[in-house]
Image: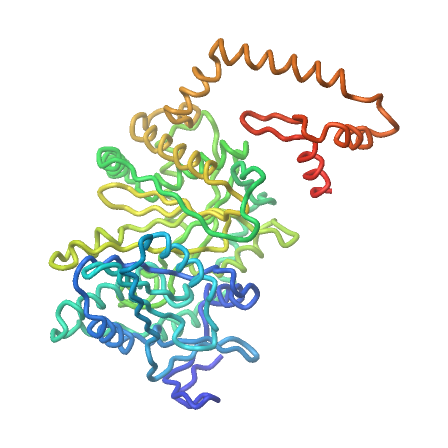
Amino acid sequence: MDFRPAHRSDGGEKIAAAYPLAPLQHGMLFHALSAPGSGVDIEQMVCTLREKISATALRAAWEKVVARHATLRTAFRWDAEPVQEVLETLDVPWTCEDWRENDQPDERLAAWLHEDRRRGFAMDEAPLMRFALLQFGDADFRLVWTFHHALLDGRSILIVLREIFAALDAPDAPLPPAPRSYRDYIAWRQTLCPSASADYWRETLRGFAAPTPLPAEGLPGRAAEPAQGDADLRLTTALTQSLRDLAATHDLTLNTLVQGAWSLLLSRCSGESDIVFGATRACRRSTLDGAEDMVGLFISTLPVRVRLADDREIIPWLRDLRAQWIAMRPHEHTPLASVQACSEVRGGRPLFESIVVFENHELNTTLRAAGGAGAHREFRLYEQTNFPLTLAAYASSELLLRLEFDRTRFGGETISRLLGHLGVILAAFAANPHGCLRDVPLLTAAEQQQFLVEWNSEELTQRREDAKRERAASALCVFAPLRESLHESFADQAARTPDAIALTCEETHLTYRELDARATQLA
């Protein structure tokens, strides 16, 4: 497809440029059109500003930065094939709301963000972003920047935020020269041969025919419609430094350790020794000069295949994982759809259902480093991928692990356990790096106390035995003779004793009425 010169759109807007999409943008556009209102790929940056803010000055700073970067003025159109069009100029969507009289602003913000995400965007209308300044107090604001992920990756978000607050704090100071246009990156991509890496991916995925099962999912009572949840685990400064020292000593990276921990957790939970998950690569250094400072979507999510054996030593195994990550670099621009086509996973099944996203910075740490007014600002990115599980890791003085999950498939307790297990695995890497994989524990101290002590007390054992005898006696009294089929006998029993306990699993109890309803629903 040719790059189009400046022209007028059908609606009369001045189009400064038009050019093809990056492969990941294709995928995001497909999801946006096929599942509107799902919230997938809608990014929400919440900036907590506990200072006196001029809404006029803040809006002017945004307009100044939007004018610098063509990506922020982009929309997507599609006829025979999709194209991204950059408007010459546009108005920045902006709202201000006064919440000072609200006695539960945090709860209101959570509900507001949920509805804001559901609004989504019309992908053919620029800009694919909007802003809201919410006032909690005289010197307490929340700036919400909502945008579609098809515009920006994590590196770009950092660049834009730095420029915004530089323009706000020093409105008369010039910003650094504008970086190269994202259009240059798309032109560079057009020179790549789509099939150049097919042999590499075919060999990497040879023999892998089914996606790795996810860890045990939530019990009944989950959300009735898709909803995103997340939970955090922040490692201590001491443990984080130990992990950094371990990585430096053995020519590894924190990213390698996080991927290794996730690999081991998936293996333990699935019972499989050959697993695949997705991992996001920045994909900037291997492109064109100046890409590190460009604003746009460069990232690529690709499969990482890991084989585990109990007798493998931890350090050599992690070095293999690191070597594999480096070897992927010449092939990191392969579209995921092309990689999937090289695999043996068929029948429309995904190649993987969980991804790991590693960032070498945490926004709060990086943006506060400049000092001044920014030293007290707080930043939190809320996002929703189309994967059931996303592990996001942010490197700072305290490594932050965030699990983002689909509430229709996972309960909060499951996610909390997984995060705890990740922390245990990483601590074991630091404490015993020369041990074997079989030596790496999984249970937290609280779980060990529960399994080994609380659940094995004499009192609890006696209560279990008494409950078993009561259930057995009850069954002898109330069960009718077996008819021609088991399900008919069960239906009769449910009709006679609907409120009697039919099933017990740990602390979960189901009556015959509840069990019969769920069996009918499943059927």
